[in-house]
Image (cartoon, rainbow, N blue to C red; front, side, top):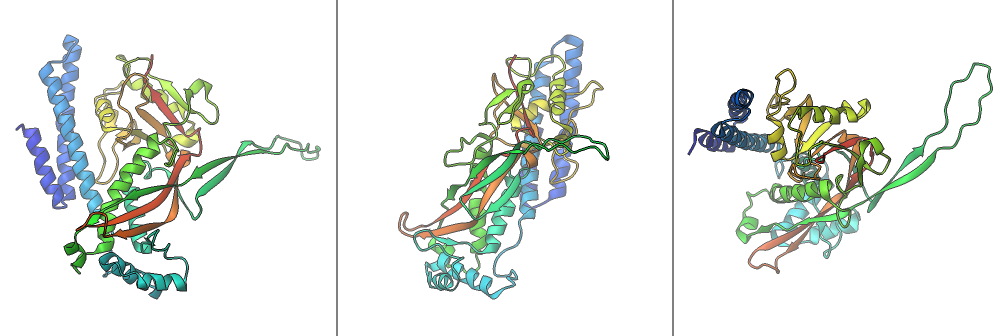
Length: 418
């Protein structure tokens, strides 16, 4: 086992103990080792027009280790960010406490009498035996908070909660006519603005964690936190894939699913892209220039809050690039929990983004807060099923989520083509 591999394993052990500062220190140590090895590789290319295979292999190995360090660091930071839940929480209202107690009774034993009584008193809690019951508000808030932390696109997009199945958002195709006039000059009548409508339907997202009878009978186990922990990763993975590549059929529509055109021919309803100039990847000469071009393809009003979106493999490729002054374009996070930076803008790692390949769009850049909208329908429902997988008890958990582009100017893509 190499020293680098040993370091990764050591960090995983430290990360499990919640040592954020130690994990961050190991991450920065790996980055320094990567920078030193890559500088050596670039120097060999300048001297001999090719790097020593041993040096190139070392750079790739350290780059992979750096990715592992980043995963561990993110995992430790995420674990520490988890809010406390359970019977020790202060509910603040009697009806919330009743709902929480009734929900726990339903989860542990299947006794739904208290939830049914709440339904009769206020038709806002339950959806009936066939559709399951809404989780307590604190549990729903915990799930939403954790999804925002582990779902990459959700963390940078606009998120809106609705109570209906579809959100319809009007936008102005043409605004009213305006102009300058003198103080006493007549004011000509302005033209009426033309409006159109974007539609964001919500679709059902589900997970089905299983529990043993022993787990449900253990009064020490916090079932609210257990359910949230079981479904949050499954929900984040599914919606994360849909926000990037979803086709809009029974799922959100991903920003890569919309029509794409050369940015010079951009029009509303399309996503503009810039070509790399190389059919296989970034150009061999001055590859960083294409990233600069993509940055300035975005209007200044969107650029100030822009993020890069790419997968881990693409980030590893860009990590080796330097600008004309010899500075690395990619910089590590400044502190635990922060993002790496590329050319001065944060990097969001989304594994659903395509790899660098012919005709692919592996890099997105834009203000996703203004460009992409995530729609959450309020309410997370749980249906207890003790029959389908005996002796285990299944918990069919559902939430409704939608999404799509709301501003086609705010997102640009880099496309691999000549």
